[in-house]
Image 1 (tube, rainbow, N blue to C red):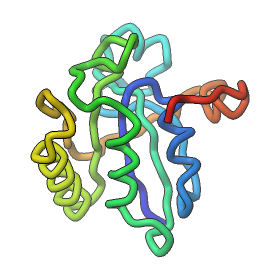
Image 2 (image 1 turned 45 degrees about the vertical axis):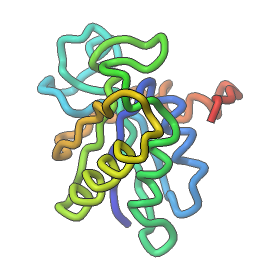
Image 3 (image 1 turned 30 degrees about the vertical axis):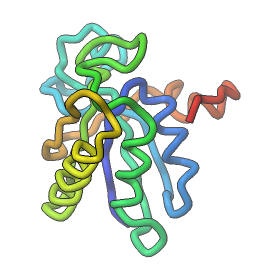
Length: 155
């Protein structure tokens, strides 16, 4: 099994999208990319931690490759919005790929450039591509939120 970590706005919908991908074993919501240790949802929403709401994906590379996960990532949010997604504003909602290996870094950068070159988006893609840091699992009430509340997202 391998790990991939993505931030694309509010983590509830991102988690739900990745859970639907065949070959994904697990997806959890949490916080990463900042400096605060043991952050809480309230800390992260306050904006002082530097953390993004993120999803850590555990996947079987024999069933789904990292490039396919990147395709999902690019389709579930607007990577041209800096520090926001829709009505959610703040650096905790930034678009980011947290790579775990040099191969993931290379694939993420190549996919970002290909998307920018495609002309699909009018603006520049502002997605950060940075090394994975400590990942802090979010509180239990956030895990599988959309399943628990029978919510449906646009993607």
